[in-house]
Image (cartoon, rainbow, N blue to C red):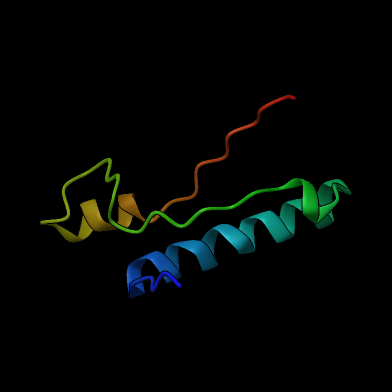
Length: 66
């Protein structure tokens, strides 16, 4: 069993919230959406400032086809 940290759990919760809303609003089966919580692994801004940390709290959507 893999134990995930606080940031990863929070990141996954954020991603799941977006996926749940998208599935409901777009009438897409939730089982068709895959989510991952990456925590602090891939920042796009510096975590040294409040503005940078706010920018790093995000969800990225990737659409792929089979």
